[in-house]
Image (cartoon, rainbow, N blue to C red; front, side, top):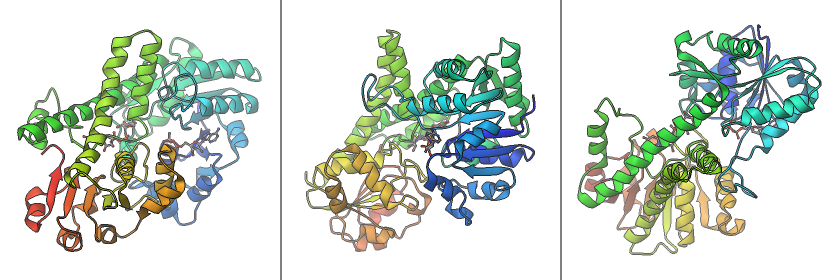
Length: 464
Ligand code: UDX
Ligand code: ADP
């Protein structure tokens, strides 16, 4: 089976970069990325390729090469589905905010809508690939909808979880540790569908890095990988608090521990807490599914990773209040960084949102600077929490595009995203324009303690 036309539903952080790389590497395949969000599609089609809606190092170059050659962005979902031999579903799967499984289970309504639309539009056989992060057994639900509402068309469902990390998406896509493809490998049609997707990746990924499994293993592997990674961050963050009490330094501990080749050095960077669209959601999915099978101990075990992460964000914020003489009411606090990590404009579950919300509840005035996040996104993130009136968020939070202005006359500065540019700032200048004593809280262990303290700052760094 040779794939000529690919459709990807969802032009977000997963669909956009993944399809751009597939189009770049497979010039003979037409790739159409569709989305119902007209503004987003218009931005993907912007003449100035630097205006694409997702900031990822190297992405604009890939898009520039493939766009309008064999990579297209469109809002016409139906015709892209109709033409495609293979359809990727990369729509968002937020955590449910209502009903059964509220705050825990994934909300599959967007996935279900896609499945119904695919069933309605398709006139010939298609391979449907789940790319969104999904709870285990979603493929089965997809299959059910497609088979019962379709026009007698045959659908093969594959699971092809995305392991790219934001900020390094292009690199991760071009040189993945592995590509995982789950399918109905016990049947001839299923095997052929799996092979068709293997062939696409084999354009640039070595065959031994392309793993094929059954669908459930593939779906569960994605949740497991993210749960393990998040667990490492929570583990080192748990140690950061102990370090602060005992006089140990979490960076030294992480280095010593990470040099054990059985443990390894990655994902041991202590922080103000992990964020992003995947870790929390995937663990909650895991907890929910464990609970639904009555596996209480398994559920509790993984839930603790989230508990630790919430604690880390909260204790960072509480420490600011405590250090500023137990009150931040009416004080100006500069937040440097709003994205959940550097090199992305994604803010989903970012620690900055929760730290700021805590400080706002303590009546602080917040000024935010982030090199890539737009003002409207910052307000939307705070409004989403529903902690106070939207008008109050706009009154108490100011967003600026000059980092020095953000810190001007501030009582305290908190570094919450590890943007490289924060290392290069003129911290003497910042100090000179702050109120004294000038407090600086480093939630990312980004700054050099001795240099910062020499300037005169009252300095706190996580795990030190
Ligand atoms: C993650 C997985 O890494 C990726 O494979 C999956 O496909 C999606 O979820 P992502 O959320 O984009 O990717 O970023 P990641 O680099 O994993 O970081 C997640 C969070 O953990 C960030 O907030 C980051 O700052 C934090 N983190 C990461 C730490 O605090 N310390 C670390 O050592 C590593
Ligand atoms: P992710 O990080 O998983 O890529 P995003 O939220 O960045 O998530 O992107 C998901 C995209 O999917 C959004 O742009 C949204 O508009 C789009 N989307 C959701 N449902 C549909 C649908 N039924 N048809 C087309 N696009 C959809």
